[in-house]
Amino acid sequence: MKSDLYTPLIENLTAKADFTSEQLAIIKEAFKIRKLAKKEYLLRPGQISHHLYFVSSGCLRVYTLEDVREIITQFGIKGWCVNDLTSYLTLKPATQFIQAIEPSVLLQIHRDTLEELYDKVPPLERFFRIKFQSALTVMQERHLKSISQSAGERYEQFRSQYREIEQRVPQYMIASYLGITKEFLSYLRKSHRSIY
Amino acid sequence: MKSDLYTPLIENLTAKADFTSEQLAIIKEAFKIRKLAKKEYLLRPGQISHHLYFVSSGCLRVYTLEDVREIITQFGIKGWCVNDLTSYLTLKPATQFIQAIEPSVLLQIHRDTLEELYDKVPPLERFFRIKFQSALTVMQERHLKSISQSAGERYEQFRSQYREIEQRVPQYMIASYLGITKEFLSYLRKSHRSIY
DNA sequence: CGGAATCTTGAAAGTGTTCAAATCAAGTGG
DNA sequence: CCACTTGATTTGAACACTTTCAAGATTCCG
Image (tube, rainbow over all chains, first blue to last red; front, top):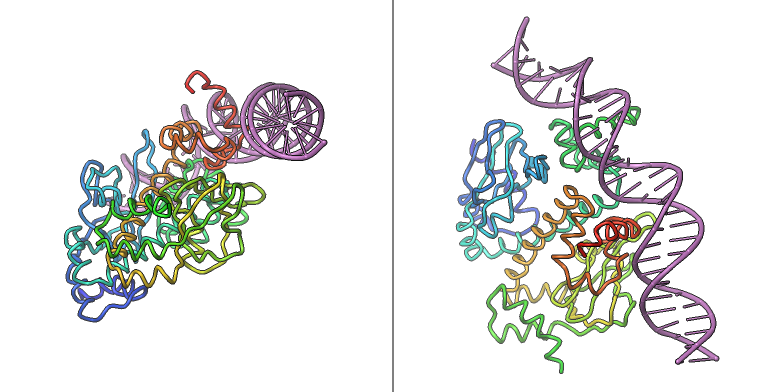
């Protein structure tokens, strides 16, 4: 059922803005289905990110190689977007990898198509403005915590905030997302064993 | 000269979008001048942020009290915006302080006025979508560095990226912005004395 | 079963904080 | 313009948090 895959997208759209059913149909039409096997890459450094990716099902990670160490900057599960946004917006080569952690289904839209849609469907521009606003506040909050809290606190908070992700991805990836080593995360878990 | 104060705003607007001179006039009209003495507060925790603030001149800081320690989340100089964005967007009480570090002049617009403007001047919505997009990528980059780089590297990078701010604000504020103690920043400076 | 990926352990080293005191700089009022 | 107070920066020692490295244990999957 094609429409199944589009349900999360439609829900997302209608939650934050008003679209007529005609507009929704146009938008839906513009998003193409993209399936990924486990461990398959959607994007690699050097490539240019030409699409916006909406996760319909599965789980992905966005990460970068700093020095020689992997740092995960985003996870993506149903209802989230994943991207190397800088590459998408500036047309510069990506610096990040996007890889499926599980078999996944994405809905992708090309930058040029979306630009056209902004003109064809004005509420879409508002939708994205609002989306980017919220994404920014989330990122501000995340950054604040990363410099004001200890690793243990950040882990606790991650566990409660993203329980679903915590249960689906290996622990060394969570460590990477939190900016600590897998060994230290293991140590933290041990010393609080009673809690977990 | 009133128009002097508006120049940075106009430049900012016209750099990223196309407005007719009529539209620019309408927008300009909607922004009110707000002057602050040194150390004066624009916003305190508990208050609701009803305005968007554009810095026309001077220098401000946005900070929060974590535990008992001040953490600076943003600086604002000419051409930048400062805010507790979460409060502005959700109408919830602010958690951050906004304080002038120098005598400053801001241009402020009320949320309701801006919402009306989005309808009256459609390109404005696009302007802000693009602004928030860029702000998000900047924040992503900043967060990545805060978890992948050492304090020394972050300081080096801050010095080169924000030379102007570095020269205008006391060092303990830079330490606070970088998420380290003033003592440790002092130590870093000492051990690299030759470089600075 | 066998191999690869993941998770755990412990010791040693590095990075950053805390606290208390000293120094330096910058207004402010007399 | 000096004396004084406050604000800002520096120092050093002890401590806490996190990483590194090397090894071992465990789990997962073909």
